[in-house]
Structure formats: structure tokens, C-alpha cells
Length: 495
Image (tube, rainbow, N blue to C red):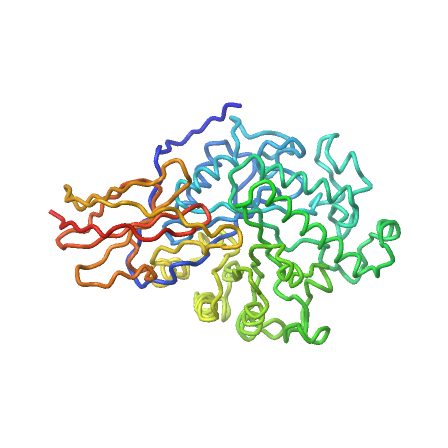
């Protein structure tokens, strides 16, 4: 298939160059959710031309790269539809305005987004909503061959929406097939699942899955059976992702409360809905069994919240994250149109970032991308200048791979406008390179992110900093961010 790209794209990668200002941890997930359901974040509305869609995505990508982010989490399957040519599900109406209609002129949005994200040395996490079948149970826009029409026994209507029945084995296999198709065909860095497992309780009405429970319960209580269905899905998905591509990560973003202390002594001192009791998702079991590579709990409440305080939940999740990475989901959307404290200034979000770093978490995911363009309160300036001003790479995952690439061999020479750095590296592998710069009398410390001046896929870099003599070191990174030993030290005075 031929895809029409309307944007001039360079044949080489776009280096990430460090900004001025105080630096932060060298390894930190800095991600943003880009929601497509309801056109929350992208595209801005359905039916845009392919060129407009691409330009809108690039505008967001460039903004987040400039702001120090290193990952985007993009919703590619919002409601049993697709932002890519799928053999199983139709093109999303949020893309084109009509379910099943491809973008015009035709191109592959997922391939485009992955390529542009990787070109900027950022990760692309493909975000799937596994169980949502229809956003409105009263209207089915899907073509005749769609699973919602061919297999009505897989579908349960509840609170105005339709869901794939988590207790139906055939429905579960179908969802796995859809997700693994993307893993197989696309160069994604991770599969990401949000908090929609069994739906949030609505008005005290029970979820009507009694028929499948009666058929498949195996003597379990309704609650244990439901949790078992989700456990099975998570374990199968993780196993099959790793069989396809061992380097593809699997992450889940659960609701921020696992269980309340009143229901379980292991729970948090909170008083809200919970993953375990209301959504039937036992996150702690998944961490214990190592079925996930990271968790990103949605801690969208402020410090001191009366039901779910951030300052209670943050240490709880850190204590229970086990041997898996913990990214904190931050609700920057809370700042939209806020007129009262604490959300009417950047102070709460910045306080949450500081607290998470102090607690030793592995990074952040912000919900959601379009919020940043609507907030006029200086958050972006604070991130760029004081929080994300130095380059950060995602944390490594040694349980997936811990073998670092070979160290580069570095040469430095004076050049017009600066110092030209060149090195030998494995151009066939998906390697990136970190460039460190030190003063002549400065200790070489590769743990200090403030010494990193660039992250690039190229085998050369022009340092335009002039007037002084520097020492340089380059390290190689594989796709899982394992870092090589340092290169030789090279010195060159700028002309």
C-alpha cells in the first residue's frame, strides 16, 4: 500500500538538545496521554484531511519534545475501532467522521506517528481500550462484519454504553488477537492499557453478566470470577506480547485506589471507589506475578483531598510497586478553567512532581496532551526551565534485557561554528547516543544529567558552544535504554 505523506520529513533523526536551567534525574519517564476518543486530544475534530491530521500531531510532538518529554501514549483503539488499517476492526469515526472510512488521501496514521516519534528519540506506547465496544449502546455505526454485529452474545449493554463481556472466553480471545496484530505489524515500544476493565458502577445498578457467570463460574463467587477473568486476560496478553517481541513493554494505568483500608488492611487510607472491589482489577497481583512491566496509577487528586489524598496514595503505590516501574499519572486537566485553589495555579502539579521524585518513583504520565495548550498559567515554562530542563531517558528494564551495547569510539575536531564530534557505532541496530560535555578540570560523572548536551541517532554531532575547551564522552543506548560503557574521552577546543 502506498501512503501519501504531505510533510517534508528529514532523512535523519532530530536530536534532542538540552535546554538551559536546572537539571533533573537522568532516567525518568516523562510521558503524556494523547486521547482520541471523542477527539479529546487528537485529531482536534473528525474529518480533517490527512495533511491536517499529520500537522496537528507533529505540532503536539514538537511541543512535548521541546518541553523535555520522552514518551507519548497514544490511544489507537478507542472503542473497537482503529487508527490504523486493521484486518479486524474499522477505521475510527474520530479520525474520518465516519466509522469504516479511511483518511483521505489514504495513509497509515499509526505508522506515521511511530516514525515521527522515533525520529525525535521518543518512545511510542500504543494505548488500547480493551473492553469498550460502543460509546453509545443505542447506536452501532459499525459495518456488518464487525464483532458487535456478528457476535451480539459477546456484548453487554450498561449505563448507555456497550462492552465486550470480560467473562466470555471468545470475546477475550478476540481482543487479544486485535492487540497482538498491532504488536506484530508495528514498531511500537509498549502496549498500554487504561483503567477500563469491568465498568465503573453506575447508580447502584449491577453489571448484567449473569448469563456468562452461570456458564463459566467454576464454583467461584461472582466477584472472584470477575477478577479471575481480568487476571487471565492480563497474563495472556503479557505472555503473548513477549512471544511476539520480547522488547515490547506492557503497562497498565489503573484507577488510583487499589483498595481502601476499611476493606483490606493492605489498602490505602482512602474512602473512594477501588480497582479491586469495583473494577475487578487486582493490580497488586499483576505486579507480584510480574505480568506487567510498569504501572501508572491515576493520582488525579490533590494533596489533602478528603477522600483520596495524593500525599497518602503516592507513598502507598511506591511501597507496593514491587519489582516493576512506577509512573505517576498526573491530572493536569484539573487546571482547565480552575478558579479555586489548588488547581488555579501550577503549584499543585509541581508539588506533585517534587514529591514523586523525592519518593523515588520512575516518572510521570500527564493527562492529557491538549490540556497544555489550554492552560495559561505558566506550567510549561516551569517544566521547561526548572523541572524538565535536562535530557532524561526512560528507565531501563533489566528483566527484559540487560545487555548493553558496545562503547563507541569517539573523535573530536574543531569545526566552523564549534566542535564536530564523530564516532563509530552500530548503524544497523536501533541505537541512540548520549553526548556528555565536561570542563577540562571537571570530574567525568555519567550519572549527572546536567552534563548531557544531546541525545541522537546520528553518528555525529556539532557542538556550537564556543570559546572554551571541553572534554567529551559518548555512550550508546539500545532500544530498551541499556547504556554502554563510556567512549574514550576526546578533547577539542572550539575555533
